[in-house]
Image 1 (cartoon, one colour):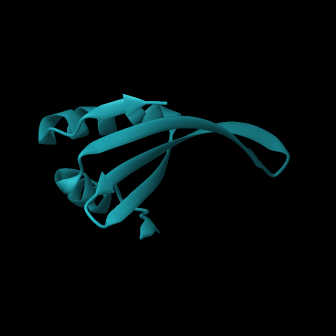
Image 2: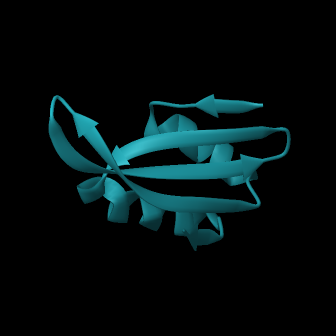
Length: 75
């Protein structure tokens, strides 16, 4: 069952059990202006967790994901 998480720490808990983490850049419109948002998805047994973050925070999150051993797939 899919779930959207709003905390990086909570997402990392899902990522520890995940077989892979997918990264996708998406352009969203907010109040008439466009901004790039990154969706990171962790496929854990029985659960798909999604986290939306800003593009400037992506490298920090990817470093943490590599530390815990999650395979990163960029889409």
